[in-house]
Image 1 (cartoon, rainbow, N blue to C red):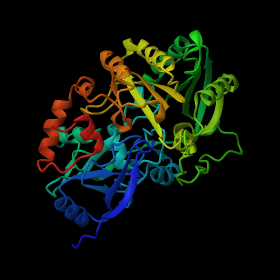
Image 2 (cartoon, rainbow, N blue to C red; image 1 turned 90 degrees about the vertical axis):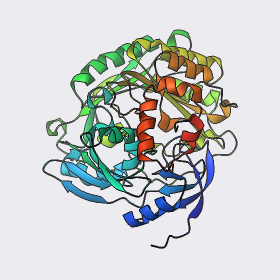
Image 3 (cartoon, rainbow, N blue to C red; image 1 turned 120 degrees about the vertical axis):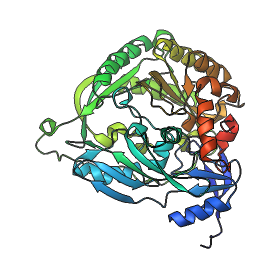
Length: 457
């Protein structure tokens, strides 16, 4: 098979902080993929490009764009098993299966990521304490290795390789196809209960109470928005939302069981010039308004996709941060380390880095993936203008707080973490490296993230 010349494209992460002029290949058939893999010494696998930082950008070599391999191969409406190519978007899966009464058990904040990206990042949703992460519902993976062979992996068939791939950031091979177990859905609606809190302590208490319910019910979702601009005892006040699926009896007579998807198009917006719209003043005003106008309420009917995928209604969000883009710093800490959340918020506000957005979720038990992010406890994500981080070590004190608390950062969103702390945050990294070396003896797989953090041995 004759290989076409790669295209040269300007690529970035979703946060638009890191940019690369890259050589990109898009083979559409297995044979073409094998030829590319055997002909290129260094390869970075890329899906929809929704990683905030440099996880899907190259350090050198080519980029293998998988988005053209997006077919749903089969769907068994009797048992809910979906077989799909890795370049398909979660949005496409939901479009096809939700009207048939099936849904993905785990959906992150956006449905515009690929299946391969969801597996490689082992993404989580707002129902993690009961449902776990995305990898828990992947029945098998077809993986293209660096020697050109295709291997089928599962938790029962080469479990080490399977779990190294789930959460492995695309560094074990090319995920070609996967089988995913879906769950029944009576409707495409959720019921939302909302509580406004007046302090971080009150927010944490509300989320902890919800975590107990979530552990017993995988269909319970919870997320809290925090007002990081609050002063004194108001710091961390917020809005806590709980969602659970609506049944047919919960719907008014005029409401269709499966609402029409009204998510806007995915057309990227150009970054605003200079510093953009996000500043200390706009953050303060927006935070105060959001808290003031968010009232506690119960039993509000919300479309499932609106509840689970808020990022898809804010596609222009990174553009608002101006030319230098957006850094999202997300970390997880175990249950006893809840005070780390306060410590991080205090550090950021005292150093002139009040987050433009801060969201808190509960985590339950993690998966067996050595590089999978979730651990039992809490996870906080904060959005910061990159221009507020003039040096790569601007958040080193936060890295240290997280690591000392027994926590870790989310590799799929990372841009700035101290590489020296990665082995402490991910103590199973040596185990992952041994499996990665077995799967990739030719050392073909790489990424800017892997090089920056020293993930590969």
